[in-house]
Image 1 (cartoon, one colour):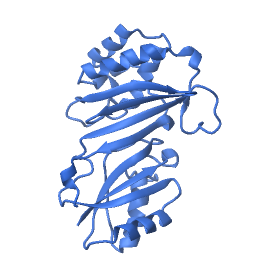
Image 2: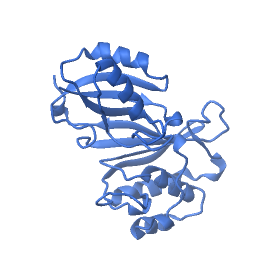
Image 3: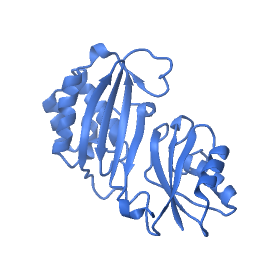
Image 4: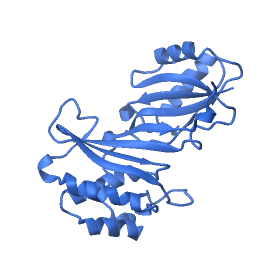
Length: 249
């Protein structure tokens, strides 16, 4: 039987989601606990591959069990076994061929920027002075992302993808007091894409790149013309959506 796990994690102490040789990952940590509790080696497949230091307020993974499980009991035990920076929200039954990665229809990310020195948000956001940013221009540039589909300019150069096409349906900045948050939603994302997009939009906000320059970067398909990737600590995977039919009632 196949199950989805809905979870969240603070990625500060991990080398990303995916298992890495000689490094600790979220996937490895959960697999170890799950295998122990189910008394059988159990592998899990995540909905994506967040990089080192990236967080997730919502993340899904699937695993298979030989027999029907008590979902609430397993959730309670997993949360007891797992470290404080990984939390399990729920375990749900899905159809046999449901896939946490390939059947996700959209993903949303947020990047958080602190506009003041905030000792409580230091590890979960990037600090940028409000005085140097033109948020209106950043939003104007962000809106242009939805006019394009090829985002090779924002992709890590060495990657195994077949194409660089993404359907972006949301991209905007919002300010809430001393915090600035960038939200972006798409059917898929390329490796390092969101951090590169944010870094380039910050170039626009600081007056180092014009709106036309931002457009030229996208059309160039050249990563070297885009801005530097921002730090991982401010990036959160916030939402993953699936078709309703994959969930058992």
